[in-house]
Length: 215
Image (cartoon, rainbow, N blue to C red):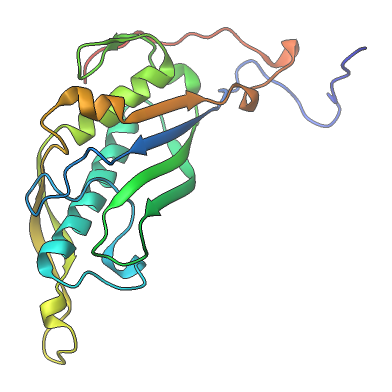
């Protein structure tokens, strides 16, 4: 058996950055769903995405906190390399805005895999040894911090009013989703999809990944 590469169809340059693909799963059953700054978990969804919008301002604020954490997570992941998000799957008990998210899954395609470090220390004190570990750590850092930002919040008490907008810009604080860093880290699973990478010898280049340094 032999592999013949279609070199006439495309050129393969060792100077070309090699993309890497990772799948991410966050099991959120142990994250807070309280009507506090810790509540809301993490989700890309906003109030208008649900078939039934949140019925109270407290529930709507949870949705806004979850979306703010999604933004914080994206910012944390983008520190070393540009990437795009693919294949987002959110799991709720129903499509009503008063229900908390239970699971979140998505894919990350990084433009340059060499920019993703391989070593470091996770938020729970464990050793980071792979690129996937590093990404899980960056997600954990985002979910373990407190951040306040002005965001658009849906207010169901204004629904139907012709004089007041249903949504307004509000200062929202999203605190850590759990007081236990181990709970946060254990909920995050990141897996590299090795088949996404070039798989013939002439297309492979040496990995020159940086070692981890705290940002």
